[in-house]
Image 1: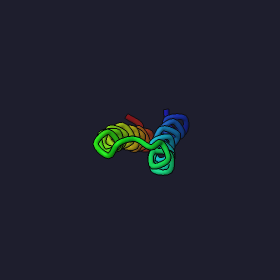
Image 2: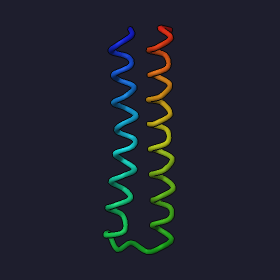
Image 3: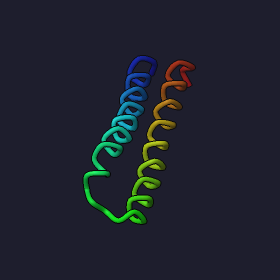
Length: 66
């Protein structure tokens, strides 16, 4: 359960980081109203934060072996 679990955690955390990066570069170009853009950014931050946190927890579990 070690190496494959660590790899899965790194992949999930990387997906969260890429999600934040793409959202930061794509959202301003969409031409959405400021109120909607703020809600979209908050939603994106929550989803990406969850992915990054989950990925880091999976990596930690891979190191511990539990």
